[in-house]
Image (tube, rainbow, N blue to C red):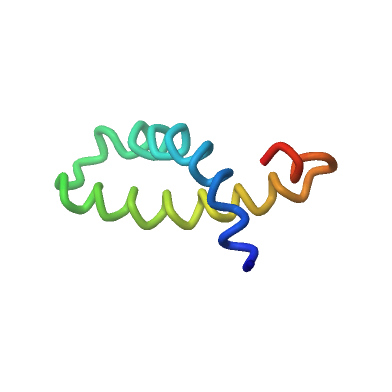
Length: 65
């Protein structure tokens, strides 16, 4: 099993707060809705996988996440 497949559960947990934060940061910036969606989709996906990889490296986190 690859490390990406192992991180899916952690990505599932962290992606909602991460996407909401990204949307909040982009609100009022004057971007069209489609552009904002693209930015949040790409940045949210990459950030969720990176954050989950970092969280899974914490001691004891692998058993929970």
